[in-house]
Amino acid sequence: MSNKNFLYPFTGIVGQEKMKEALILNIINPSLGGVLIRGEKGTAKSTLVRGLANLLEEREENRCEFHCDPEKPEKFCELCLEKYKTHKPIETVKGKMKVVNLPISATEDRVVGTLDIEHAIKTGEKKFEKGILAQSNRNILYVDEINLLDDHIVDVLLDSAAMGINSIEREGISFSHPAKFVLVGTMNPEEGDLRPQLLDRFGLVVDVVGERETARRVEVVKRRLEFEKDPEKFVKKYEKKEKELKSRIERSKTILENVKCSDDMYEMAAKISIALNVDGHRADISVIKTAITIAAYEGREDVCKDDMLRAAVLALPHRMRKTPFEDGVLDEAELEKLVENL
Image (cartoon, rainbow, N blue to C red; front, top):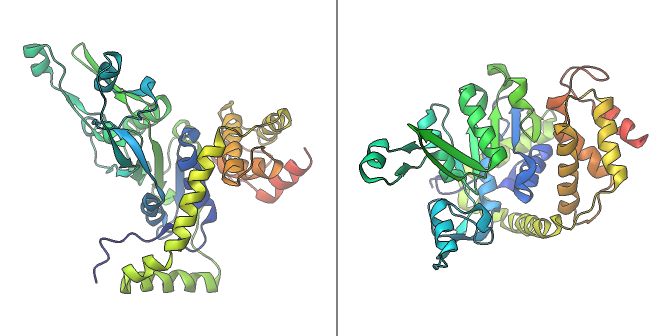
């Protein structure tokens, strides 16, 4: 039986808990700023991201090219906004958050889209040929081997992810559309790194390695072969777990806006960043936002010390300079001691 119609279930992956957590947190709270997954080949990076698609619930969206959120007119595309302002009916449909792939060979035009200048001059109307950023609005944009992508294109992606808008200007004619997405990049550090300025723009970073324990490695191989032999049966086996995780994610989204973070926790974020010799304030903001999302994921409305520790592990390794730990390596035991003493 061909397995092309079946995705390997997210909950069927052995281990890689930090990578799973970082991806789930970005689904609960897309404003976290995406996640960069660094690791050697064959560590299930791509499999996990593809499996993520099964955990995404249906949602209401406008019937337009950018699948605008009917609840957020302030983020409508030009067409939906025009209808909204003139009180014309806006048709909605059931849709689903998707994983959109960006190939590393993509040109800037393919990413941002193009404006037909000739059409605009002749008719006075803007004609926009949408690119990958348009497809990505309210979706997950997945870039495998992001470190091999042209730096300029990575800049464009990170700007759009931060601003939630893609703007194109050609020959004095401009066009903007919503482009709010969760950016997920994967890379093998052996093939080159990202510039520090680009690294810092990712909300979370996870370093993954293959399983080093015999029993777990055996389990990885067994499950993979079981999936290849009968994908339908294998997917069915994890149906219940997938459903439970999907429900937990949806619950977390509703809790998120009620989560409170005390001044003590804000102070803790600042002290952790100072102790780790972290540049700028983006790190502190990331730690707080991530801790709030972790609390929601755990079903709580108050951020606790443990949330801060888990958040720091995901939000700080790529933002560290040297002392007190090794350059770019976060010693979790040391971090735990530091948090306990705050």
